[in-house]
Amino acid sequence: MKIKSIIKFVTLIVALFFIFIFSSCGTGLRVSKVDFKKINTSFSGTFINNSFKTKTRTAIPGLSTDISNESKTTIASLLKLHDVLKSQTNPITFKINADKNLVVTYIDSLHIQKTKVFKGKLRKRGYYEYFHYKERVEIPPLFPIIYGEAHISRLRFGFSNNNLVIDDCYISNGNIFIFAAGNSHREQYYFKPIDQ
Image (cartoon, rainbow, N blue to C red; front, side, top):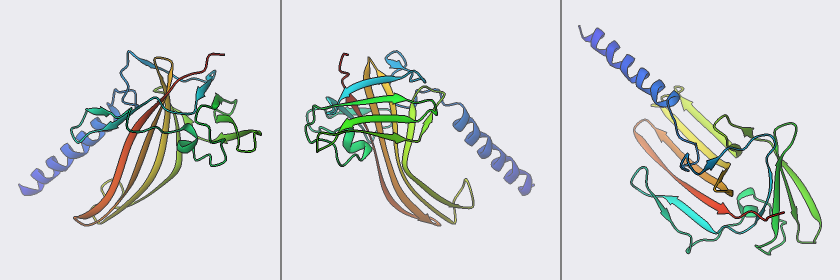
């Protein structure tokens, strides 16, 4: 009798896991569907390098805090473009090339125009996703109850009211059996377009 109960319990957990994974209906950027505009292969735009608005996740799920006046972040810092001209108002241009990679054009500190290609993925939900790095070890896979380690730095690009939204997510954690430690953050930065 106990074995049947355990099998039912495990089946329920697995079913709930797959329902959770495959029934997500958000935009992937925590931007309302009304304001969200999908990126496609014809995407291109030029944006001011300095963010005008920042949102960060709060301790309460589903809520965010506007910290626009506290933090100014640049597109260059999010993309780790260390040779960008220091002026935060210099524009940075984005486009998706034929290989569906993100092409970024900017002016470097020597006033030379440079182009860098970021190999990410154009997602069905309408945002572009790029990983600086993604390292994950799970023993056993999917449910790492023995050992787990994750180091992820991910950017998602999308539009909200014609502004570029960059969702920056960082995760670094690990566990051995029930002992776990780590940290993470997820913030969104908004950048104004430059009318061409």
